[in-house]
Image (cartoon, rainbow, N blue to C red; front, side):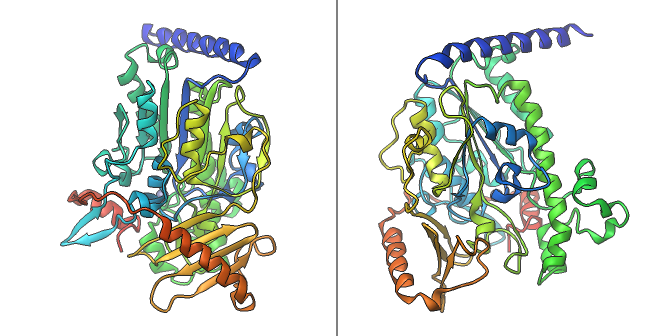
Length: 468
Ligand SMILES: [Zn+2]
């Protein structure tokens, strides 16, 4: 054993002791503000793919354990169905129209252009930094690069983890912590106040077979791997399966599940190593959007606002400050995460935030099941607005000739039966509410688009289906 290894073991042990003692102190009194706040987002993670949402076979044993000790929102919604608008919402507490990152795949003269997250907005990281937290961000998606404004408020930001699998992201988190806290970071990083955001990429296409879990989800894969569309980027999947059906879905789903299970196992390693699952750490876990696996005749994301694309997992784990094992079925939105974390940390929520703090609901107040949540998808994607209110979901197309679809999620959770024609008055009333909400959104502060002229990135984005 080398001296460095011994030192690392000693540091880890000391870190565990420090964490344990702080937790014990906080455990008996009223909840104190957490000094370590962690936000974990996973790209393309469907709400129904995590096993604490009831998915079988088990995909996320580690997150299931956190869910048993935390608060789970079983009806959480993204604000859109792809990365730039959804992540803009998570980090600003605003709907896409108001934060302005509504595109990211437009080509002008061969360039990729994405509007940056406006400087004028106050990001979640900026609130924590202002309150004295050391802020660290490691997002594994190039749409979230610092040059696109997503690094605002972070003292340490590594936006170049570009589509890397979880082990590479975990390594980068360790490197950023070392940069921030020096060689003894394992002891030091939890001694002060820290806000850490990690965005993983694993369940995103191409779906890679993961042998450890494949035998469980797709036992026939070993006998006939060619039957499974593994390692194929979305652009090619679209060409190969222009009209994907249940047969295609049955081949893709186990590959996707294997990616989810792989992510859970990899995150569990980092979380245990760093004590992210400690009782005194406030950890929120969610996703930017889901993924369609042929539910409405398509694959991938950003094509609609159906449930498989907009419903995301949402779990808040902080046993020192929140109830354990609580389930809340009233709808919640990605824009609620920002005010919730800020409030739990005892800080003031900026007045411009459109999200709603979920703190009182988590601590016992009866949630309002009728509180609506909204979603939007903007051109050049299909121009759609959607609203979930109680059991109803309305999806309104604003494209020429577009119509409205109505679903009753209590009887039709998969949105297979559009009942708009039979409920004219209800559709009109929901459309009025949807239109009033859309009209009420303040526009995003103006900021010039940032051209990305990196050829390699362009190729990567194209193969992942981000460029049409
Ligand atoms: Zn995404």
